[in-house]
Figure 1 (cartoon, chains in turn red, orange):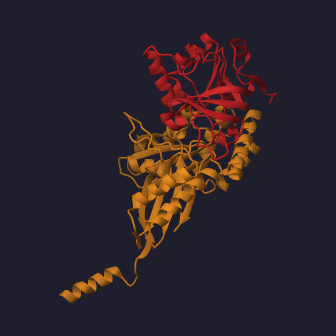
Figure 2: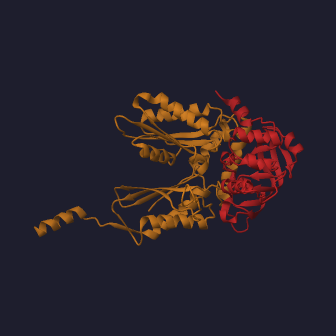
Length: 184
Length: 298
């Protein structure tokens, strides 16, 4: 395994386009959370002509619904959720300038097309490694949809958040490459 | 006449008196099981991850398994959930027929335990009260998915197996014709696992229920996931099928997290039950690598 690439946010289009499927990365800076219910509300808002609750230009959304924090911790266990459930909404958010997504699992052809068109990247974190990942999250602040509990839209400050580029801005898919290599 | 009726009642009651268990004991036990299952990975799963890491040929896969093992250690040492998806509260209860539960209703006692465990243990509440229209969170992870069976004896055995949503979504069920045979079932398993791919967080554990009715097969597939990974089915044909399916699934190349490798599944557990002369239902339920369960006997 090669040394991970360090990424400091925001993620410009130039930086995003330099990343290749299979790269290991360590992400630092501000990222935003959103999963099923938050995405539904964001896109319903856009459809009504409203703006997103946060300007996501050159930003990353992490598909996560964290466990509650114990006293003294910034956040509870916080691993990625299955990204495919956000596929119906992701192209519209990418059109708004979103530069990266962190989740787990496959994406639809529509999402990959939007990524290629707008120069966005899909990262994956290790599903279920939620206690380990939480150690790279330094703060958690709810920004919108507080009534959704763990599904609220929040701002995280992360340091060396570990992830892998699963699909790059050219549409190269590391799931396909990796699995082909070990198939018997 | 009166005397003989009394004698009959006496005979039915036997000499044995019912053992009483307070509902609050059930509540307390379930609250503890919810927390224990979510913080402490059981040794069978932990050992399977360690031997999987030794076997894995992909360097990235090996690294991922190393991080999953490290995660389990952090969760245990710092007493925090292994995964943020602390799941639906799947509970298998075997209640001895000589037990009398007093001081409350069983389902209320179980749900009070779930609410207490998920609240006091800082576990995520992941249940919506109604599935299609409002989807409003119940905010205490109730109700439990409770399966009760009445067994001989005067004890209560409780198995708590939290079930994550991502892996649950990859479940399948098919009503086969008996003439389809075992080869069709193998293909169904492989097709299910291939379609699930990365989504259920491999390395996975595969629970398969064969036989019974549609809902019985589904129940058995879930029950199979609660069996230790080291225990094979006692029927030699099913035990052989478990081993064969494990090899076939691990030849898929899916690997840890679906990023390629040799360790796609840690185990295949099959449970079977008698079925109708016309039927061969097969249900597949998938667990992620955080295959969690805790149990207690009261």
